[in-house]
Image (cartoon, rainbow, N blue to C red; front, side, top):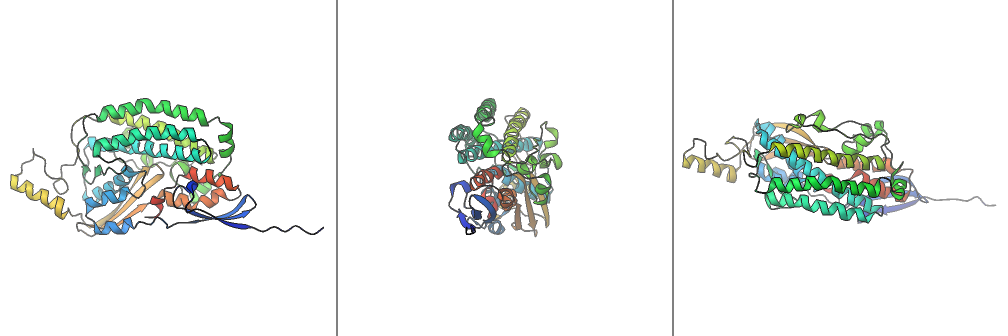
Length: 393
């Protein structure tokens, strides 16, 4: 009887494949249904935002960085603002920091809701997406309330916030926080003990703690593998050390654990939002009292002409930042989202570099998918939650 001979097959998955969650191309080497190797190919969404930032004044960079990780606008602008403020030596009023915490946690909820809906839809659970996107609409309504824009509000600015909170803000946020835990319960009821979901996620795309560290992974991916790293605890910013919250940790590091960790993170974000909302007065300070960056308030001793001149300089010429460099990390929805800013002393940055958690997660897809089946790749990609705008900057 002649000997059977098999050959491997090379297949392109993406870049126009809905389950790649963006323009990501995976070159797969297959032995039947088994994945032998995965080569991620990036660059299809390259925007040049980091280079463009060098031609913009300091405050003008905020709308640019918000569009990198387009599901984490507040986190992007917060990391950038904190880095520039570090160079300026600015200290924010407590109320500003608390509002920033609240917006960052609402953004985490927004991002995780999109992740949960799209991830499980890839696996066939379309009902959950209808629940998650319904809640997300309410969070986008809050962005529209504070700034008029739903996706990229540019509300966090260097030196504080764009303006004070509008009327009705507290009621709108409280309404979301009151209803969201019940909606998370509904999603968990549909998934956590669902036999089909368990078979698609348990033991799939497992990542050990050692491998998570070796690949430089952060955020929910690393925490699902047992790495207890969270920037909010390790390097607190905006007063996070004064808030009471837990960091969910997994053990198996598979697709299911990454799901479970993110769901628990949503509950912790609700908890953080409640604490922040209680601290924030409806009206109060929304910017630092530093005339280098913010036009002088009416109660400061300035002549009308001096105030007009300062207002003109800030908004037309742009403020200058002392020469130097600073790196500030924040805990974005996908993990450590850091911003490295370099100044030559002028009114524009000479370099803006974002530390992208999605890029590192993207390169680790091969590690997670090799040895599994083609169908498992869909589950793996959804579980790492890559945002291609965060990869191709």
